[in-house]
Image 1 (cartoon, rainbow, N blue to C red):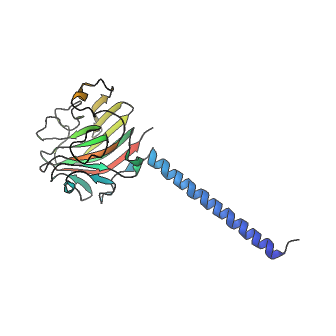
Image 2 (cartoon, rainbow, N blue to C red; image 1 turned 135 degrees about the horizontal axis):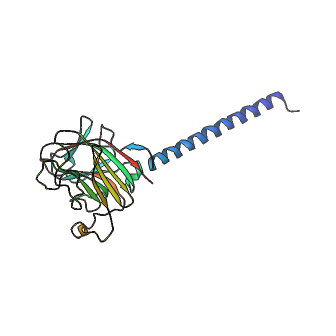
Image 3 (tube, rainbow, N blue to C red; image 1 turned 30 degrees about the horizontal axis):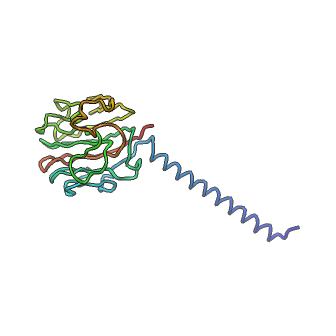
Length: 229
C-alpha cells in the first residue's frame, strides 16, 4: 500500500498535468481561431484610425498622414500607400473591401486592388477604382480606371460616401452608398484595355490608396476587408 504522502503528490501532479494540458489545448485553439479569422470570413480592419501601422508609402512619404481618425492622402507629390499588414498576409484574391471616402474639391485619387508594392510610378499591377468627383480627369468616381469608366460621379465633394468593392472569381462590382455603379467581368488576356494597361487584370495582391498630386486631397476611414473563399 502506498504512503498517503505519495498518493497525494501523485494526485497533485496528475491534476497539474491535466490543467496544463487543458491550458495548452486552449492556447492552440486560440491560435487556430485567430489564424482562421485572419484568412477568411469576418470583417477585419486594415486601418486602426490612429497610425500608419500596416501601411507602406512609396515615393513622397509626406503625402500620407492620419488626421482626425482618417487616412488623408495628397497635399504632396505623387505617392501610393500600400497595405502591408498581417490580415491575409496582405495578399488578397476574393474579398469585399468597404471604406468611407471623402474627396475635397477637384481631387483625384484611387483605390487599387490585386496590386503590389512599387517604389516609383503608377502601380503597374492590379485594378484601380477611381475617386474623382470634380477633378479634371474625365474618368469619375466608380470607374475601373482605363477599363470601364463612369462619366458622371455619383458622389459629392466634401461628403463622406460608402465604397464597397467586391471581387469574386473573375467578377468585380463596385457600389457607392449601397447602389451598384460598376459591374465588370475579367475575361483574361483578350481584354482590349490590356494594350494600354497590361497589368490591369485579376490575380491577387494588396490594396493601395493613391496620392495623385499636391492639389488632390482625399480622406479614407473605416477601411475593412472580408475575405471570401
